[in-house]
Length: 135
Image 1 (tube, rainbow, N blue to C red):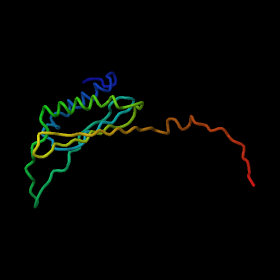
Image 2: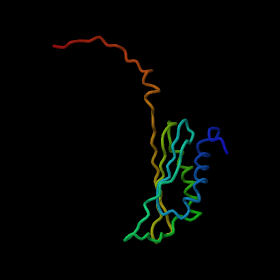
Image 3: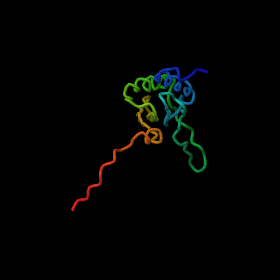
């Protein structure tokens, strides 16, 4: 197994998408979520949009992403890291969908930075200002 801590974040994202390739192939829509701490991926996964049923019967699913589209999705995810600025802890969410009846797909990316105030709150010591009463 690779040591993710020693790899640049772009290589880690590439690795994650390679791990999810089978799950993404034929997926119609969903969200890939990657959680990051110290620029290292700790947790990742895919949330698939709900499987629909009618009258208690599961619907036959439409075709989702092709292997070529999954590869393009992976490259887009890596390229989009250039837009991540000055944070090392957080989450990246890639929402994706395949358009019905068309051979096209779309994705949007959301970055969320997270900070743990317990790590820095004690460092901030405001200077005591003399109390001034106003009349």
